[in-house]
Image 1: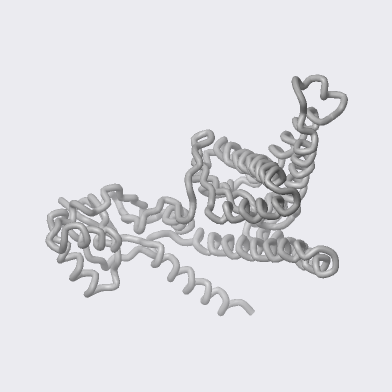
Image 2: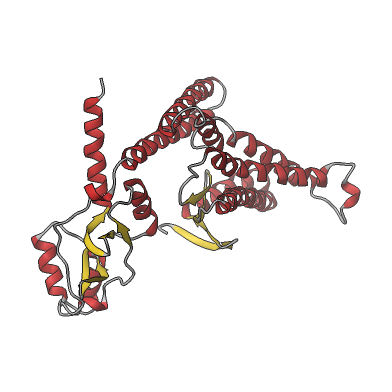
Length: 358
């Protein structure tokens, strides 16, 4: 992942930290240093790391609950503003979406409860040795804050997804998403107004909520638009192919003569690989134009049936890391589809839908 480093794996899920997270640590370290020198800086950074450990557990709660419903998580990424668990998708069933959304805040509440047992004077005798009461108390309060803040009924917080899921019991999902997004943007306006008079941080939060709500509404609009169509109406049927023993010179010629950037590699009527523009350039740098396509093509080829819904195809293209899907019809190659093609279709369909609106 660009600008991210892998920290490890939790429950089979890769955890990454973004480069900007270290800028946050540096800035906070300098702030704490100014307040109390090196000891304050070390303690402050240690506390922030503990807090973000709780954030990772929050995201892991989402991921493990989603896994129970057959939804995998690609990774968890730590950012300065928090963590992001990249689920393959949110559940279609409103009840399942509620459970997945609530799992994160529930983890923070459990952590807060365990911390309360550590700092509560009645329970202190259960601990062996000294208890870092100040750090634990602050961590307790911030975990409660994370739970409450994430339950605000606004995207991209968990509360926005809970609200959308609840509304989905009475209306279709696109309308429920638009309604929840509107509620979130109204909350953002209120937070922004309050921030002008009380705390500028509220203005930043308001902007975050407004953008998140708009993005979620737009994403659901696209999914709704694509769900009604299948690959049959979007497949690229006129395309060029390569053979494994072709030299890269043929790929160069096709790249310059057409607008195609990815080429299926065919052998005996079957797709055996894909040569992307990046693969071509890598081959030219390493061996030159006479190198065979077979040496640089990608041998893992994702396929899709011609009647597969376009919203599912879009999810696959975004999540699999592949540049194209080979489209089959009755086991026979019927065409290809790539992300650029779907984006063009979305722009056209969106314009047509806007033209038909009063």
